[in-house]
Image (tube, rainbow, N blue to C red; front, side, top):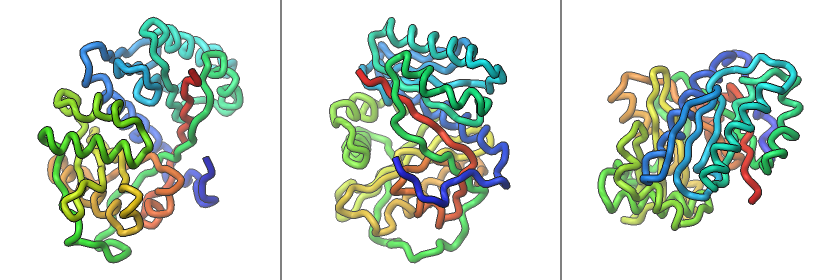
Length: 280
């Protein structure tokens, strides 16, 4: 994926990769809740999350601590452990790497190490951080055009599933298996749906950890993009979670299309992720 030339870590945000990657690990646990055969394990310096579905983006391995070893042997061992975990479950999987957790010399070898396990790089989203949203917004927003509801019942779970599938080009059947199940929402992630003319058109989810609010599945359906709905639902979600927790700082992982909006809102890149997915 191509990123705007402005996308680079900000020196003023050194060390902020820690709350970003911790929050992402917390969010990933959402996928271990929906199905009876799902699983969550912490072992060998890894967090392993299985959704119980053979769908690599929702089955993840993440490092839980930095690796100082310069030979690549420790990373290779952890990848081997993850590969065995998912092979035993007959599931395709993904490796989500916060690049600040590895020495530069090992980063240059990651592509070869993951290729041994049938993984190839899918994306390199920047992890972005903002201490507090500026108020008022830097541009006019359609304050009366979007009705925002928290995910709380069968209807809103179905609408979150359908809108997420559309926004991120995911299989509807997979989204319904995960997002439509009431038990999925029994953990720390909360979701919201934005309705325009009575139709679900926007989503945003949030996970609060002890130092920030993580924002996920931010998107609007293609027919209503560039109306300000994404920023509007983000602001609504941050305000609600801030009222619950007292937190003001927020983080997210950006897509290429979303980066300019987030940058204008004040978000700055604090780290870089690399996402590797099973090919088969």
